[in-house]
Length: 422
Ligand SMILES: CC(=O)SCCNC(=O)CCNC(=O)[C@H](O)C(C)(C)COP(=O)(O)OP(=O)(O)OC[C@H]1O[C@@H](n2cnc3c(N)ncnc32)[C@H](O)[C@@H]1OP(=O)(O)O
Ligand SMILES: O=C(O)CCC(=O)C(=O)O
Ligand SMILES: [Zn+2]
Image (tube, rainbow, N blue to C red; front, side, top):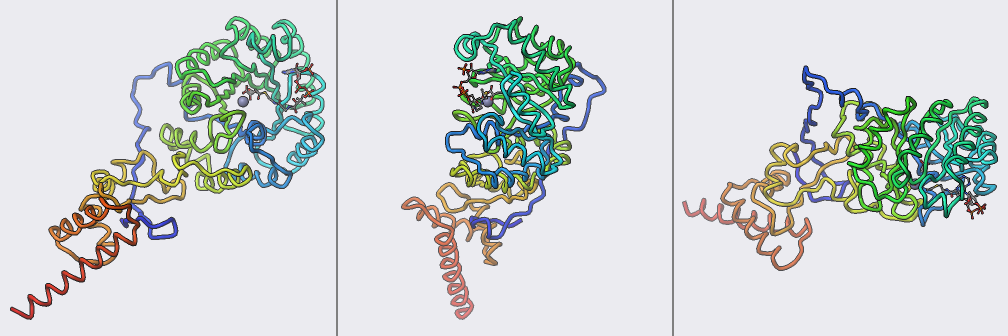
């Protein structure tokens, strides 16, 4: 194993990383084993719909086409902005539909006949219908009663199905909607033959427990697939997605880097990080994880943001280890302080040695990397010198290496002198 503080182009570590084995199964089965979809979920990638609702987003046609990288990544669906939004949105929807992607193309429209007709006209594989069901949205967004919503929904669903196109019905603001209204509506649209119903935490206020309860209840009411959509206003979007899958949801909405309305939704990368730990076999087979960084860089550049430093997987320090205690153990076995093997994503780990919290084991490894031979006591002595310097100011790898080289030269001089005197 190598050790480095160097940038990504420098030497890299290659320690093996046994991912936790989740496959050992108990002979006793539990109802949760049948309900949970953590190892068979699908992704509806909504960067080109929810993501376009991000404050900075402007996706020109060329950028939308480049987002076929998501197809190569292996998402099951991509969702596009409503074609009624603008003439260019309509044209772009048609353009993306004509690319012949493996992933199915959806567009997201209000639950009314005019919008649904425009969506079908574009040649999409599926139409995602949405309408608010909470009292807030009934009163202040569209003014429709639950009865009116159901009547319109059934007409629109019938039309979309008659066109041989997939259809999903979603209740916006599901978690603040009346449970009886919600279940009645979902039951009716399920009976009408929707492919999926959608549950949305539109304001991001739900907790994993609330999500589990609602999805588990819904799972007993409808037989179609269940899509879920989680906003991240209270930081629960990934946990809520996991909880939804445990409760029997089949599809999770994501966007690259989580971009969306306000602070966005479940990020694709963070969901991958979560799920590769929960269901390593499924995730590594199904998704081209090594393409994640490139997709994130593409989106970050398109919407003019940086990848956050603490982003799961691709944040610049996501696989950087610094404290001496951690570094020693990581060098012995990366699983000690890493739940995810960076190699799964085509990435490498780094061990930062330029600080007062480093330890002699990490420094010894750096010496080996530099081809500097020292006894353990000598490594301990030079580690103390590094710490002394790091107490005064921040160090870069070049500073640490200089301390190591100077100390080593002095050692060599001392040895030569001792040999001459002997
Ligand atoms: C939580 C979410 O993210 S849901 C998805 C949000 N996506 C979008 O808004 C797509 C982008 N939006 C747009 O381009 C525009 O808002 C359009 C084209 C949809 C509508 O534009 P406008 O006609 O100018 O209306 P405006 O945006 O001001 O208001 C929304 C209208 O849709 C109606 N509406 C809202 N939700 C629904 C619904 N689910 N079904 C039917 N009508 C709805 C509102 O009552 C309002 O109608 P009004 O014209 O009678 O007031
Ligand atoms: O259609 C959906 O399920 C979700 C719509 C949406 O973006 C939201 O409610 O936040
Ligand atoms: Zn949303």
